[in-house]
Length: 220
Image (cartoon, rainbow, N blue to C red):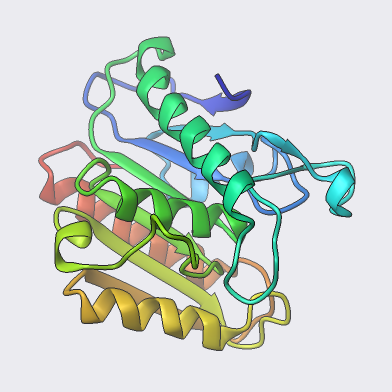
């Protein structure tokens, strides 16, 4: 199973939401854990580490979910391998936690956001909530936004309007594809570059709280 970190609130009870946060390119499993109190203070949060070392692809000493080929294109083989590893992780992680978790929120930043949306579309209804912060809709044979693939999942897509790494226009393309498929989608535009602003963190927290409540779970 993928290596990971976790944050379990002291008062966590059975049914607590499970928030899985995927880091961006060249980072590691520690990167997004400090967001847990801001995004979902009442949730069990786990932060898995991507399976591919980033150094061979020029991404520094961290890890990557796939080799980036430019635009909205991941290298097919590394992307597929990471999707398979993520599927195994999501299947196995509940048994390792100290409480029986409830609704699942799968999300991430940059590559992590791209992976999260792709996983939701590849596995319709498997995760009730999918969160993308500054990612794109991957151009890959297995990733399609259709009425069938978006059914049963709520999406949030936030993006910096001045993002130099994953241009805002790519985010807009992904959002448009989800909308055209009939997805339940909330978006947020933020006057920042490639990052997560306090305003976005607040919007994500409120979105998670509403989604968890809709699924009958306790507060996130």
